Length: 406
Image 1 (cartoon, rainbow, N blue to C red):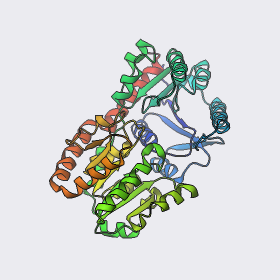
Image 2 (spheres, rainbow, N blue to C red):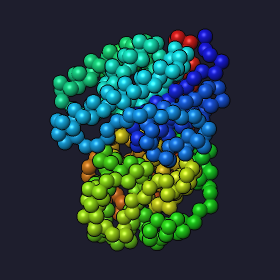
Image 3 (cartoon, rainbow, N blue to C red):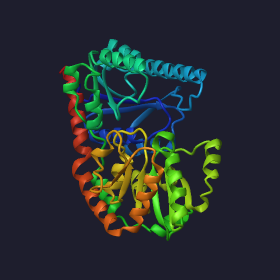
Image 4 (cartoon, one colour):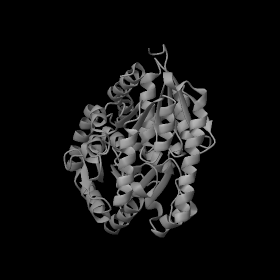
């Protein structure tokens, strides 16, 4: 029997936020009418995500533990990170004791091939657990892949455990890594956009010149924008390499990266070594505005959107940029080609190829008709294909099926 107002618990144990949290927020908006929602996240989480939760009226609770997302160049650092993950999972599990997990839904952000003990412990408490996988496992050695496959096969047999792939590429690649019947039942719940919010941001009157000046961006230059965490897997150094190549050919181009968290001193020094001067700006997303709508409007100060990711599912920032009519360039990896059809809805380049990225940016700048074509067809394709309300309804119905014992 389904409780009159089921408890819906979202949990993640890392400080940074991004597309995974936007995906969760879309579900929350649809579920608020029928469910009591609580979010559990680390105490020192970035204020942006807390502001978003508060704007929805969603209650949140803190845990005093989080993952270590720093580099792991040594065996000692790898061990430290693993211990930090185990501690975060144990702290999360203990925090969940206050809830009746049999009559609740727990949607967590974790890697099931790493967190199999945590998931096993939740299964022992008869929890209804959902995990969204945004991309397939990273490349690794054969023996490690064998271990991961064994763990995924194991967790896919756990009662009450479910995986939502957030793109078709992830589901396809999971075939053979989980139990066959489990794979058949997995529902693709795309990373998606809210057409109403997008349309409001698209039609809103904004002063592009004023916003650019406020952030130190030349108001007359052709602006290339990236939005997301300023981290290696997003292709940050490829972006800057391409910027240098472009500026060697054309000085009338500027580059900006909107990020939820500023990098450390060593990374800032590396940025400075590119000597891009005023042609590159690293901007905190909080400075774009407190609301999601302000961030969406910020996209519109750019002429082209670029996301040169190495590892990515189907990134929300890319979908939002396309939906807002920005001609977009990204990499031919994971779920990205499900949104970008080369020279139809955007431009695809191979991962790590800064010269190809530079060439594509210059092509965009010099070909107005191509920009118009990609803007129109990219926007139309995303709005028709990736609607977050449709996705949220699939997710919520799956929650209800789990509570019914299906």
